[in-house]
Amino acid sequence: MKSTLTFLHILLAVQFLSAQQAKKISAVSERVYISVAKPAQATPYLEISNYQFTDGNGNNKIDAGETVKISFDLVNTGKGTGAGLKLVIEDKNKVGGLDFIKPNLLNELKSGDKEHIELSIVGNMNLKDSLTIFNILVNEPNGFGTDPLEIEIETQAFRQPMVKLVDYQVSSQSGTKLEKRKPFDLEVLVQNLGQGVAEKCFSNHSNAR
View 1 (cartoon, rainbow, N blue to C red):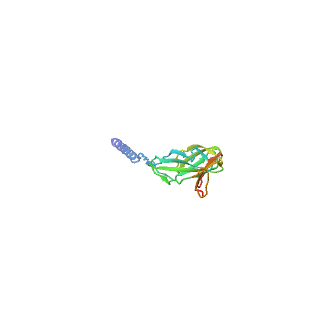
View 2 (view 1 turned 120 degrees about the horizontal axis):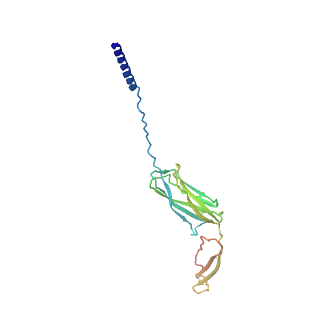
View 3 (view 1 turned 45 degrees about the vertical axis):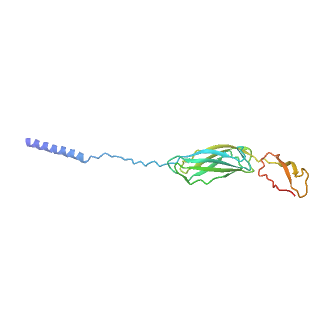
């Protein structure tokens, strides 16, 4: 009887150890996930600064027959290079009668660099009295372009000048009397009776004989 019980105890012990060993063998190690993040790409930051408007007669308008200039600095204060840059101009009021002469932009603007840009605008003879609103910006293909610069400028239709000779005076060495083969001076008074500015007026001065 004792031998039978002893055998059963031994059998149970072997089964218990086998079960424990089986558990250890079938254990699965814990999964570990590792995330590898790519470094952030350096991007440009483009800004427009030092805006100036310049016109020939100083009336701060775009006149018909006049060429004006809009100038500004394009600055890159970001860490990346701005490439494929494009100057965009929108006339929000669709005034018409304006011709734009765009400059050639640099293909790229490196970090910390600055480019001075001058845009010429010509008022042709179809220009009317109005108010134009320009939106000027520099686009970058990846969406890192400038904020728009909004400019309001008055436009003025063509004012025709009317130049007339209204008075004159003749003088010579003998006073107002002219003598043959002797030089004399002729002074004339020219007046613009029209509404527009008369430009490039000149006279050829010579001694008469």
